[in-house]
Image (cartoon, rainbow, N blue to C red; front, side, top):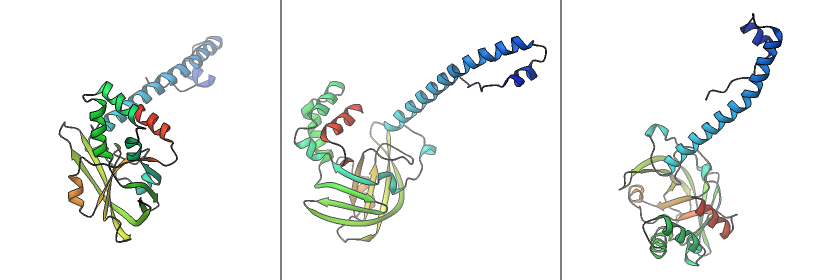
Length: 231
């Protein structure tokens, strides 16, 4: 519904010069009462449409025209791997929830995510153009620049976008390429992400079974469970 802008008394009288002043005032009063409702309905409709569009993108259904290059700052921050949380049982409620709404048992989902989440890199810190990988008490750091993006089509017909960054300097042990996937296809601050890394750009694009996943380091295990259940 189109939002009706509030009108001043002189505008009512100008539009309807034959209307007596008291009727014009009454019309203005009715308009003032109607306007907040119209605005609320319009806002509700806009939010609903936006949420529906976001959900379609999250599930991998979008047009190429919706894709836009993203900066590394979208993933800036201190991030923790969720793999340890899966292995220590913290994510058991998430696996059970998936079983109640999916086509696998909780144990089968656990096995699926064990392959997906598996990584020794338990922490990643991204600051401006630097990415620091923490693994078994050791760190390696690289500086990265955008290397475009690639659109992947999956077996069931939905798609995903990998945003790719190439190392321009840093430690020899830092990967030559990192590829982000977080269900978004245009600039937006990430709330979690899947990351692929290695030295062969093309080979990484073929990796679809292991996708180490990271949530903000500031979140507690219980908060991560809540975030996952909300999706």
